[in-house]
Every structure is written in structure tokens, then in C-alpha cells.
Length: 408
Ligand SMILES: C[S@@+](CC[C@H](N)C(=O)[O-])C[C@H]1O[C@@H](n2cnc3c(N)ncnc32)[C@H](O)[C@@H]1O
Image 1: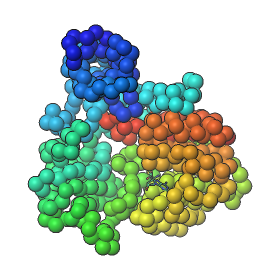
Image 2: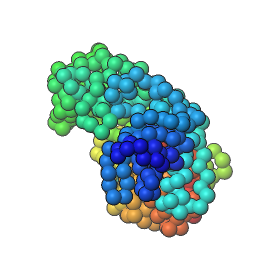
Image 3: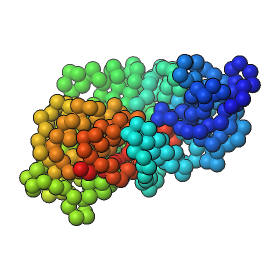
Image 4: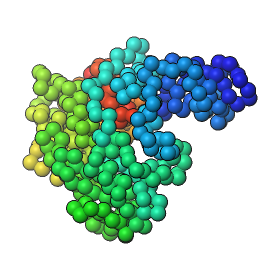
């Protein structure tokens, strides 16, 4: 590190943080987070925020570029869009960077000595997102500027599925302040959820439009998507993976981690169920669970997702319980699949899931920090960490998705 003047530093970048910024250190050893830099680079960066333990800096110049650095492919970035923050790294190198971030979290937080983090085969890096949320200004949809609430109207979107992009760019959203656009890539269904109201929304015929105010008054609206040969109903307010190809890849990874297809991994007596915790609309219960010769208990707290899961699991030996996982009364289980939100499982849910006595637990995590904390808790609860696989569901962004196998 060398100081050029009060504000601009020359920094050696050594790592990448969970939140998507690069990590360097100033002369005092204090961490400096630099947006847009890459490990191995030497950069000039202007300090934007000073704290006692760390600082933040804006990239001014790359003096020595990392091998994977590229010109960001999406023109919207230059116009201020804050959406995809890893476009300066070649798509083919992004998953390895994410694997390094995951390995770091496992080492530092979970105290796993030499974590082995594998990377799943790459998914399409463009046109993949089947659901997006956008802000609306003067009737037009836009993504927010980085670290701002101000939306930038979009004229194209590198990562949006073409069925989404058309609505995002050409749709007019009347009095809405925010829209969620969700499509079924396999079915062609399209839905626009406008908040607070869908009044004045103009989109092509055949697109289902609903206002959040109407949902509150009891109207129902859903699309269908197909994953692993299963047709799934997904309602406007239910969680669903942000891409169909991503959902397929995740199901394949969870299936592998559970050991389906190989010799049966599930232990316990044949009556002991598989627990699909944080089940959403029943994605894993309907696909992975249905491939195992066991009943499934799906746990989910959102009413909308529970309704969808009950619909999607009709005819299967599955029960859907509307509950907070952390407050569920544990029962003996042969396998646990747990796919929590970004906050992770936390101490209470780990205790509950470990109390099932399941010999294998498959953890699906979308936050490397939470993953480190959860793995630490699961190790303390008597599980050993097996395979760790990064499935890059969100190319061009720093977001990670990780599937871990844990065995007692
Ligand atoms: C990351 S999503 C995973 C959903 C599903 N496994 C899938 O892949 O589509 C997490 C889900 O957990 C639910 N959820 C979050 N916290 C929960 C809790 N404490 N108890 C039960 N469900 C919860 C959310 O409503 C959401 O549907």
C-alpha cells in the first residue's frame, strides 16, 4: 500500500468479501473494501468511508489487472444500473472466485482446516433470470443505482430471461412503485405483481397482472414452472428460485448430495420421513423427495408457499406443515434438506434439525457468511462436513449458492 494523497491509496487486493467487495489493507493493516476490484490486482482507490476497523473505497484505476478482468458486457452498467456487480470478471472465472469466498468462510468462521469446495458445471450467464424485482418511476421499470434508491430505467437486461426482459423494457406500470416480474421458462406463463397497485399497468395480452392491494383482498394469481419433469404452481407471493435453469441445477445438486440414485443413503427405519425444511412451494419435496421411497414432511412458514406446496405435492406421500422451522417439534427423520433464507439456520433451527437424528443433512445456502456460521453450529451438533458444491445460480453478481452434505 502506498498513499498518493489524503484520499487516494494504491492498494494490493488480496481477497474477496462475502458482500461482493474486494479486500485490501492500508498501511496500518486496516481492511479496505474496494468495490469493483479483484484479488491479485493493484489498484488506486479513493476512500469513501472511514471506520475504526475498516474503510471503504471507490475504484479509481486498475494499475495491474487480474487475469480474468474483462470489460463489463452490459451497457446498463455504464448508465448507472446497480444490478450485476461482478461483470468485470470473465463469466468463466466467477464461480472459482465464489468458491474461494466460500472456502474462506468455512476456514474462518466454521474453522474447517482445509475445505474442499467444488464448482458445479456452469449455467448460462445471460438471459437466465425468470424473476426480477424492479422499481418504477413515471411508469417505467428500472433497477436501482448502487447504494441508492434511485432507479435507472433499463433498455436491456443481460441476465433477464427474454420473456422477462420484454416486460421490463416495454411494459408500462402506471401508478405502481415497484413490480415483480415472474415467468415460467418451460410453460411461457407470465405474471406481473405491481405494488401497491396495478392500476394503469400496460403489458401484452396473456400476461397476468395483479396488484398487491388485490392480493390483500383475497385475489389469487400464479404461474406454473416445470423443474425436473414436475409442474409446479408458484403464486405471486411465494418464493421461487430466480431462474428455471438454476432450479434444475440445484435439484440435481441436492439429489447428488442426498445420494439419490446411488445406494440409498437415507438411514433410519423406512417409515422415517425426509424433512424438506424451508420448503417454499415444495421444489425439493416434489423432485428429490419424490425420488426416494420415503414420506416427506415439508416445513414452511409463508401461507402462500404452503398453499402452493400442498397443491404441488398432491398425490405424493407428503405433508406440508405451516411452521417456523426453529419452533417445529422435531421428529425422527431419515434425511434433512434445509434451504433457509439469507439469514441462515441459526442456533435454534440447527438444534431442531439436529434433534431429528437424521444421519444426513443437505444444507443449501445462499449466503457465504451464514453458511460459515451454520456449518460451525452443525459441526458442534455432531455432523461432519462432506462435499461442498458451489452452484453458480447468479452469474455476473457476487451472490453464491452452495450445497453441502453433512453426515453424522
Ligand atoms: C431460500 S427459500 C427456499 C425455498 C425452496 N427450498 C426452493 O428452493 O424453492 C427459503 C424459504 O424458507 C421460508 N422461510 C424463511 N424462514 C423460515 C422459517 N423460520 N421457518 C419456515 N420457513 C421459513 C421462506 O418463506 C422461503 O420460502
